[in-house]
Image: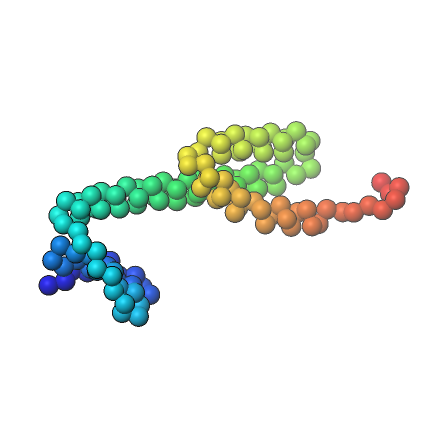
Length: 133
């Protein structure tokens, strides 16, 4: 009797039967992968470690995004104040961001939160021609 280990919403499945894993695509094409009890245990441990790693990345990405949102709010709050307040806020957030692990996931979340806002801000910077002040 085959036991389904994983079913993807698009129809891909992974099943176990008689010391073998069977991977099936959405067209019904299958690949048989021999694996015994020791191999299953090793695969299970590896999958658990990968899941924990992905969770760490997701948590770090969310923390980076929250920092980006906080920075935007802080910059809005100091609008019209001396620029040193904005630079201080930026410095503090970038320093805190640099402390998160894994950094690449945190930086991705941070960028996702601030890039669009920065692009809109840059697009709306007044332009001056000639000797205008």
